Amino acid sequence: MKTVRLTAAQALVRWLTAQYTTDGVAGGRVTTLQTEERVFAGVFGIFGHGNVVALAEALEPVQDELPTWRGHNEQSMALAGVAYAKAMLRRRIMVATSSVGPGSTNMVTAAAVAHANRLPLLLISGDSFQHRLVDPVLQQVEHFADPTITVSDTFKPVTRYWDRITRPEQLLSSLPQALATMLDPADCGPAYLGLPQDIAAEAYDFPEVFFEPRVHHIRRHGPDPREIAQAAQAIRSAQRPVIISGGGVHYSGAVDTLTRIAEERGIPITETVAGKATVFADHPNFAGPIGVTGSTSANAIAEDADVVIAVGTRLQDFTTGSWSLFRDPDMTLVSVNVGRFDATKHRAVSVVGDAEVSLTALDEALGEYRAPAACLERTAEVRQEWYGYLDRLSTADTDVPTYAQVVRAVNDLCDPDDYQVAAAGGLPGELNMGWHAKSVHSFDCEYGYSCMGYEVAGAWGAKMAVGDDADVICWVGDGSWMMMNSDIYAQVFTGHKVITILCDNGGFAVINRLQTNTGGEEFNNLLRTARHEKLFRVDFAAHAAAMGANAEKVGSVEEFRAAFTRAKEAAESTVIVIEVDEYAWTEGGTWWEVGIPEVSQRDAVRVARAEQDAERKHQRRGV
Image 1 (tube, rainbow, N blue to C red):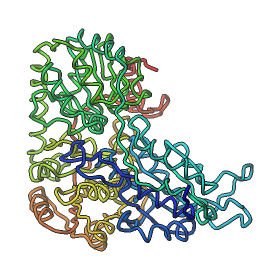
Image 2 (cartoon, rainbow, N blue to C red):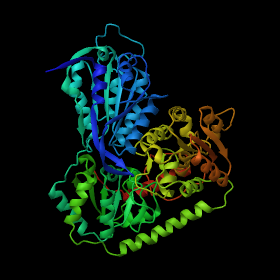
Image 3 (tube, one colour):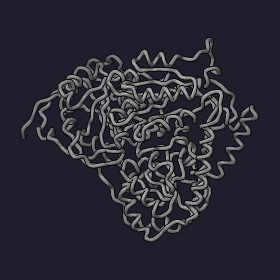
Image 4 (tube, rainbow, N blue to C red):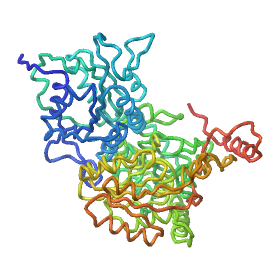
């Protein structure tokens, strides 16, 4: 067997560049590529001791095959990798690499985001010397009882695959397993490799066949026919069925199949946050977004449903209203999911399999079944009421602009293929309720982990995936901006244009809303209710301009519309700052369980606790 002598770092990089796929994305849908593309599209890197000497030395010569992008914060660059994977529907993967110590642990939050959202990301960080002769090294955290424990171990709870490479030859088995995990729809999530400084530089005679190009495909897991039969039997009995379309519908490429089945069988469609942009706002089967950040229309249909068909969703509490949304005590849950763990939640009639394959089989098994005509009649009625409410909100005469007005303005002005990116704070609810999708898979609101700081970084990564055919629009609040904004500089520096809309409502206003809605006193969320000596608003436009972006602050919705039009025409990234009402919200949604104190001196808290106890009686008692 022919061998080639390489360091562990060199072998790792050479292997990454040899992995290909023909699975791709076009027009927001899964497609087969005409030519092979590399699975690993690039590397986000911040170099320091632990990865600059060996790994950077290996990455530098292959910049054309595997470009390295300089990050400015380890967490944010890894978040950019997460957003890239989502925009690519899990078909291509980014790598993020950091040094030892704080550089490594900065990426743990991003790993959790990828893990919660079932998205692939390869994380490689430096690790402590395996020979231990120089312990403790700079930034090493020593565990007194177990010298094998390093900060790399912090990734174990938030990765799907974890390994510390203690011998170069371990890469021969570890790398294929890591990639197989990231490409498996059922196990998909982040993979982590700890690369100790001495091992990264150590050489080994690797078999040359290990580096031969290999083409990988996304596996489509087929369902068990018995599960299909049981699910079809449950659906055929339905008088008031509803579909919940989750993110897995997008990842599977099952949008067209799900839509066709709903149309032919007269079943209303609702969407989770991850499933948004499955169907368009004017589709006759569309009931709206479901759950706590959902519409009254979708929630009304779900409350009455006797059969709920959940496709590609992990049924997070924001989707189910903490499992209080479905009010029919005899409701049957049919869950179609490629992951067994998700499919078998809450006593579901489970179909474990790829959404596209499973829906096709389920459609055939349903025979002539069609839901009563009253289902879509009711859907049209409640949807019209909901859209009327949104219209009134967006056109209301207000002293201060509202989220709803800004969302409608962008919805009116953006192009159909523009890609929206948002995350935590008040914007997820406002966008989920108020945004009307114009194209399939054009909406990324990171709400699996609800990570503040995802927005600016995620938009950078998404733009790398979307390319020049559409604009990426980043929605961010002042709270998230203050947490993580440095990738505005990265967007400008690397030439990836993003339009950022910064809605400033004076602090963490949506949490202030939760605080007061549960009986609490306004405290430590809005800037003016936090302990301070000098109260002032940051000049966010000047801040963004200092990082190289076009930036302007506007005072009205009319001014905003003009600024957004200029941003669309510009060649570079633009940040538009607008102050919005801290108390004006789109009201919809459903109940959500939070930890309201059982004992309090405040009457309002005691009332809120009593209301919560009453709502808990509606919760589905699952396992």
